[in-house]
Image 1 (cartoon, rainbow, N blue to C red):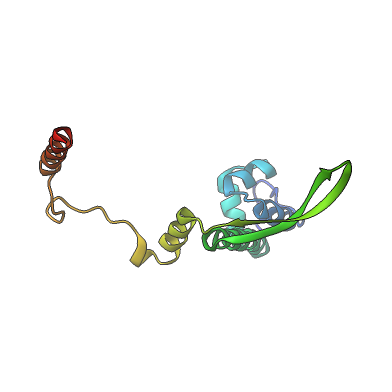
Image 2: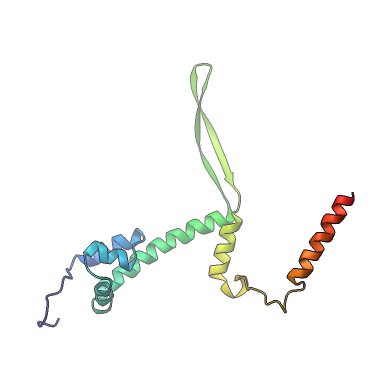
Length: 151
């Protein structure tokens, strides 16, 4: 590197530490805090030290894959099997315990909006594109209330 100026704080063991921190979800700001440097120093290390940048990328990719897998599992639903222990007539009995977790609609929406953005992102409708105005909706609501009161 450049022999002039302040010596670098970068050390050869930093890529492994950075990868480990990124597997835990570490951001660039958290890397800066951990290594006791500024955020701009982390940006510089990412630019200048390919082994550091690769370690950060691999750590983030690893945890992203784990989280994506868990999100997909939750979106599709899953069955969890285990054991349950009960006391029956003074004796401990082991029972098979199965819990089914149905698909989670919010996880499905989140997955689709991020993976198939073009087709699943909500788009706000302009007033011209919607069929009813706010005043028309209020009027219809009032009519429905009055009809309900008449019954």
